[in-house]
Length: 484
Ligand code: ACO
Image 1 (cartoon, rainbow, N blue to C red):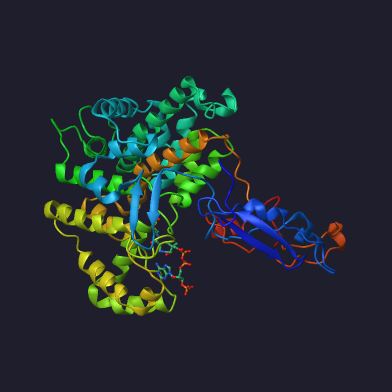
Image 2: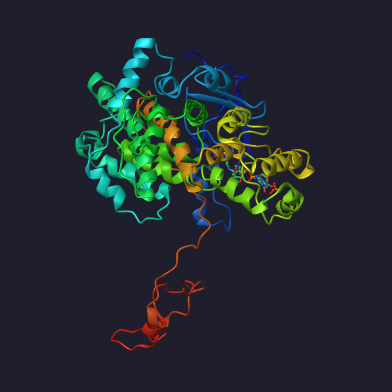
């Protein structure tokens, strides 16, 4: 790299010391580490814990403006409502591509040739079968277990089968070596993770229906095989409805990646310790499940059910403005206009409704959408529908249970997580463990006091109700019973 032109820099004057620093600007970013050299002597009375002499820290609660990686995968322009995978607009991919073709693009960087796509599809489908022991694992969950709890655990469980994919057993450079054998080992884990994502999701679905599990069929698309594994009850020549199969494929393309959202960041943070990819994906699954992220599609439907009918929308909007409720499916950290995926989901919903019939919540959803879009509260805060606002309605119309919606988000997102994980593992210069700093505002040094001379602590843990303890047990006396 040539010498940095002086205009491509930030001049910072530290008014504590009068010193001036020149921080290079590269790709419109400044390095947070550059601020580490901006130290100042400790002021009279300043807390030692401020570490003033160790350099300035950059505080960014919730990563509002911090880039943690250089990436070539996905580009979002949140003001213009643009989303591109490897340069291709999401609208074009949704219209022309298939989920596995898009997966190839995201993970390996370019659209595959016909032959490459065929090999990739064959490998993914070949690796979709689960070990027969997995049946016992899935059956060990309670009948009412949330499928996300099952799926999150299942990815971690899956890793226990592949010692050859575990850097803790094989050496920590297992996935960072970049030689053909290591890359081939990595690709095998990629096939397994994508192949088994649908199988495990279908198993999490069927176990709660009390159904036997279905071996992945051959000759189907990725989403076709998924629908088959969920729904086939032994009928001859069972073929899922092509409109639903295509709609799910489009939804999977839309959900395949979204750069550094909470779950992808979790996968990378977890992966940065060089743990095996199955553990990293399980961590991502847990992160996705929260109602601020992938759990929002489930939350949207619960919200619409609670609103009930279009006439109740104004009262709901008022409750949101009084901060008593949240309008799930609206707002986004990056998009400050409508999420481009939401238009495609809306169009896809119409295709699905043609074969399933309209969802009874659609009118309430449309009334809510229209009311929010013209309300000053939402306009001022640039809150617009995100992908989850409409996707839940399609899933409902397709007959999926509410708590299965986040699973339908995880399955395609495994691809995005893997693409980012692979990119990080193979990046120039190796992997640095993600270890952020904190601003310590706690107590200064203090000395231990023996328990007998201590006053009550400021905070005592709350009393809790002990479920499962009956009145009879409370009335009984027994050795070791607490006097409290
Ligand atoms: N309903 C009501 N008010 C909202 C909403 C909402 N859905 N979203 C944001 N706001 C308000 C906030 O209260 C805040 O108001 P204030 O400035 O007066 O305090 C302002 O808009 C900015 O919101 P933040 O929470 O600061 O924005 P942030 O970027 O941190 O959060 C998030 C983004 C989490 C997505 C938020 O908009 C939200 O909670 N949305 C609802 C949940 C949801 O739909 N999540 C799915 C996201 S997309 C995805 O994961 C696929």
